[in-house]
Length: 342
Image 1 (cartoon, rainbow, N blue to C red):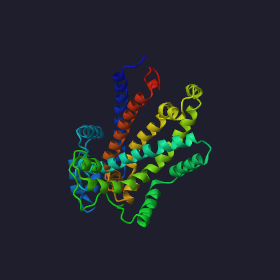
Image 2 (cartoon, helix red, strand yellow):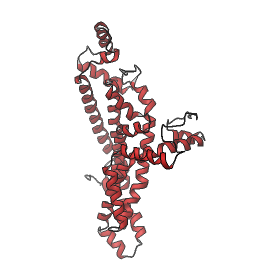
Image 3 (cartoon, helix red, strand yellow):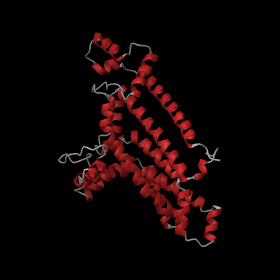
Image 4 (cartoon, rainbow, N blue to C red):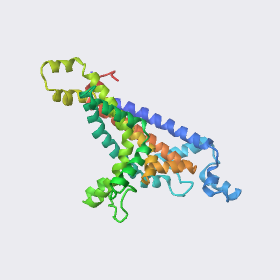
């Protein structure tokens, strides 16, 4: 018997809302116990104590913590994450201007993971214990163990030596006018407006950062796909298909790959959510200027409102990614739709 889909997802969304509430509470408490007065940080060391006290009153820091938290949650639900203590601009405005750059980088990264890792895992499982398998396993180990910033530097050196005309710094050539599109993603908006010059330039600039970010996920997904393919090859229905003379190509791509894709899809969804906030090193190497490097600068400058906004939004991406993963897995594996199945 199958569960009601709406009831199932209503329960999960309610659980995710609870997680987001706990996350916001923890962020708020940590921001209040961290050494440093937000009012003093906003005004600078040369401000007088009277000015600091007036700023504390304006920011509501003189009120009880419960009232401060209730006000913060109410404003956050309405899209108001406060003002940056450093720039004085609304945090939501700054994040909205930088998030599309990181979001586009992470989307291309996940696409590279799917295009490269899953076929590599299938090939290594198909040619198990051969030189192809050993080469693929060595590649996956290197991808998992080597940090992404080192890949970024190596790719820059490669481009500087072999591809002298390949752009590797920045998101777009400033000599080109960026298309004003609905998504904020250069690759998508340039195609919508027919700006193929912008598309080519943006694709060249995003390829190496995305590849540097994807290497760890490619290595991990390759190993997981290979293990799942080898394990599922011993299933009774696979052995039955082989005994009936069904071609290996049909078995692999119609039955085994679908059965073995649950773990890789889960990993890709979690990688997407984690890279939103963890791509700052690669962004710094390639001068990308996105959401992740903004969060790093906020931490270094003790911009507490910006830090709270970045962490809260990163947690929201994790929640959305988990919901999307659940939907995809229910579509891929009908067994998960059964009542009581995990």
